[in-house]
Image (cartoon, rainbow, N blue to C red; front, top):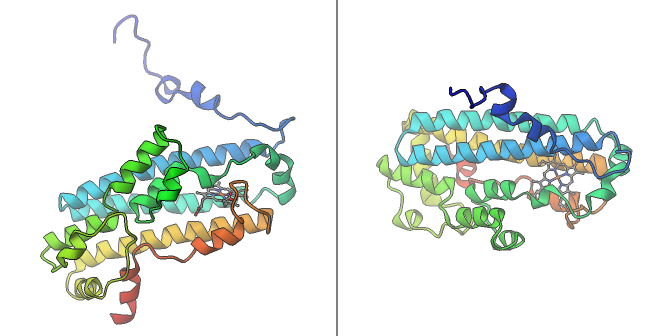
Length: 265
Ligand code: HEM
């Protein structure tokens, strides 16, 4: 360390002064609960960032046929997801009236506009051009979403991996349009049944993908319940019908084949 370079400290390394200056309530007072509301959303955005970082790693590891290490990373993702779901408990300590005390200051702001959440959806195969176009051209968010929109999904990486593991994945699936939603396929289901019956290593990997699918659905379910108890049937600040819209997103599997085969094993 040279004489004019300050020593690394906790505060300098983590940019704590910057971090602590980022919570800026809009309500006058400000209303007590707005601090929690801001912090919890910022924490979620940080977790989204970390999840994207880890998902990119899972894809790279699958591409390198490193199944064991990809499962290890998936395990980390699943652990983060559990923490993310349980964090909703904290927000549920906020009563409807406490939320209403500052809600009007949010204008149109809503998690609906989280580009990182949409990036996660895109990489998991839930892609929408309309959603992407809501982000302004040239912005960081739009560039990130465009990249993920055109990139293969995690399911695509998995099918290619299975093919290299000598499973007879039909060429049409390997060359599928990566923008299109993942549809159930009897041919893939047959392969997966085979994996479960004969191939414990890859059956484990399938189980982690089911955990992931369930974990995302769990977050959606808990989020909509929190929304129902906090704003009831009111419309969302993001402009949707609110809980009614969110209920439609719950229970849709990311990897339908992995669910269908449960009845065939
Ligand atoms: C009091 C707390 C909350 C309420 C009342 C609430 C309400 C809503 C509503 C009504 C929507 C539907 C879109 C719209 O705004 O019209 C929505 C979407 C969303 N919210 Fe929340 N939310 C809350 C907390 C959170 C938190 C802490 C997060 C974490 C980042 C979050 C993330 C999201 C996401 C990602 C969506 C889009 C979901 C989708 O389109 O499938 N929300 N929220």
